[in-house]
Image 1 (cartoon, one colour):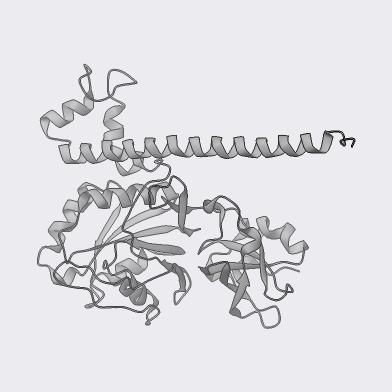
Image 2 (image 1 turned 45 degrees about the horizontal axis):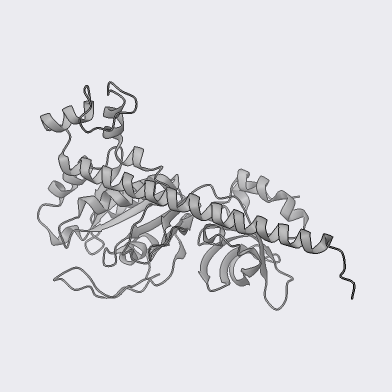
Length: 363
C-alpha cells in the first residue's frame, strides 16, 4: 500500500497528490520517483527515497534516454523524474513528469530556442544587488521572465547594509513591480532574512546577475554553507561566477531553493509574462478607444494620455515596447524554426516511404 502523501519521504521536496497521480503508471512499471538536484552533461544527481530505509539519498543517474531534440524538454534541475534503479551501468531516468512551472529564457548567442533554468518552482526570487544602482529595465526583464514561468516573483534587494537609502530604493522598485513583494535584505547582518524565509514556502529558484549575492542568500536560507561564495569587486559589483550550474538545495524544515548561475542575457522566450510585469499599461490599453490601438497617434489612446499627464513614465513605456518587440521577434523565429523542423521531418518520412515502396531494380 502506498504511503499517505504527508508521510512520503519526498513531501519536503514538493511531492503531492497530483504528482503521485501522474506517477502511478510509472510506479506500476517498477520505476522510482525522484527530483533532479543537478544536471551535468547527460548525467543527473537525483534525490529519492531509499527503497530499503525510506531515507532520502542522492543517486547519480544517466539522463540521456529522455534527452529529446528540443532543449526545453531536456531534464532540468527541479524536474520530477522516473528512475530505473536496476539499470546498468547506472540507474537511469526513463521519463519526466509534466512540469507545473518552468523558468524558460531565450538561449544566448542569437538562437531562437529556449533554455530551462529551473522547473516546478513556486517562487522566483529575483536577486538585485544594492552595491550598484539597480537597473530598473533589467529588473522588469526578470519580472517578465518570472511571471511567464507560472510561479510567483519576489524581488530581493541584497546587500542592504551597503547603502543608507535601502527603503527609498525599495519604493522605486515597487513602482515598477505591480503586485510583487519587494524585500531589502542583508545576509551579512541578517536584516530581512526572517521575512524572506516566510516568502519562500515550497520550492524556490534564485535568478539574477553574477555578483547579486544569490549563493550567499542560498546559504542564509539553508542555514549552512551549501554554496561556495567568492568575493565580488566593490568598484563594479562584478566578479567570477560563484555558481557554475543549477543546484537544488534542501532547506531546514522542508522546502528547497535552486541556485542558478548569473545571467548575462535575459531574453524572454514566450512573452506571456509581459501583461503581468506591465499590468498598469495593459489596464490602460483596455481603456483605449480602439481595440487595435498601437499607442502612438491614435485618437482616444489612454496610454498616450497617461504619458502626457505623467502618470505613466516614458522610461516604463519604452521598456515595455522594447520587450514586446523582442518577444514578437522570438515568436517569429520560433515559428520559423518549428516549420523548418516539421518540413525536414516530413521529407525524411516521405523519402523512407518512397524507398520502402519502390520496386527492386532489375539488372
